[in-house]
Image 1 (cartoon, rainbow, N blue to C red):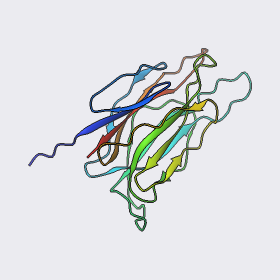
Image 2 (image 1 turned 90 degrees about the horizontal axis):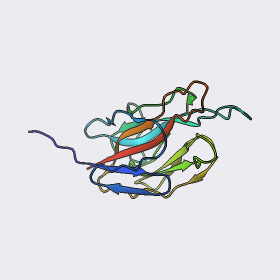
Image 3 (image 1 turned 135 degrees about the horizontal axis):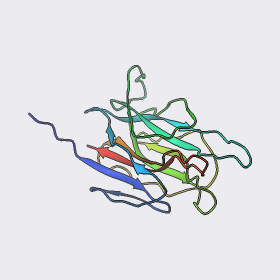
Image 4 (image 1 turned 30 degrees about the horizontal axis):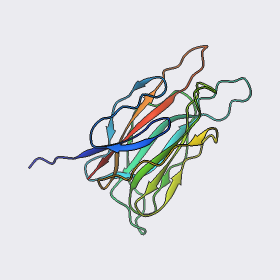
Length: 189
């Protein structure tokens, strides 16, 4: 028997967030879309880690958010422990360190929000992200506090977030670098 997995896309733009049941594009920022990575069948994003470049100081190039790695497990309960997990990760930038994993205490991640800096100020756009869990937690990554939060995406129409695709700019040499500029998150039943 073939198992079919229905996906929905949560996608954020510079000033709005929305969910659709087909691919929609809000072209923001520089770079190219990477590969779509999905959690294994029967697992959902229950945690995440961010690749973040720290503040480089005055007159230095800051890329801030470089990557997002979804940590996939079966839906969590308050008593379940994290022993084994898999990772769904699209392209990421070249700079920064991966932060410690953040986990939903129960359920799985169902919505997200990006913190962005207007491109008129710098070529540095995505700063930080946070996720809502079906159990009520809000998980915020460790990163830069520049810019402002966009709106929350709609909650997944399916059971939870199960995949990711990122838009990343390659290193620009002596020009200003941006790294991660946009993200699409996929929801599954």
